Length: 230
Image (cartoon, rainbow, N blue to C red):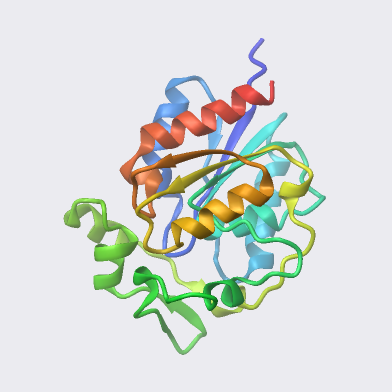
């Protein structure tokens, strides 16, 4: 009987579930049951509701991995995380109780990937092509980065002011991948997130979209988490 946990992969802002393709392929080859849903990015509440919807469909213990803003979605599960036995953060936000994304990002210089962030008439934030290709996905071949730019989903502005409640990581084991060349979330901030969680941490010479540029290392960490909760 296969008692390995299921894997649910949570994409971040300006992305969709396809950004996990390389990781999905590797995990499926190992025999894991993997789900990488599409998140609406219309509000944090809507994104958490989608994650809960997917978790309800899992038939047993589940590892949840989030990238970037996906870490915000994962963290916001709080104390109600059905089936979840471990959390993996891939260059991701891991806020604590009372923190908000916007306030956190305003504490230092604007990351290079967000310098020309703009808001449309509906209140959604988009990345410029130059910032996306040059910094958000800066360690990919430009042609591949432009494909990811073409499918970016905008992020609701409200997510920057949402205040985190009790974070899920306070009651679950955690793993964290620090992207040492990240130009969207400062690597030192990632180290701080990982440190205060007490996460099992690895550091990779990667830009922000590590699951695209370094799928082997990302898969290895998720696999380690899955084996660690047996």
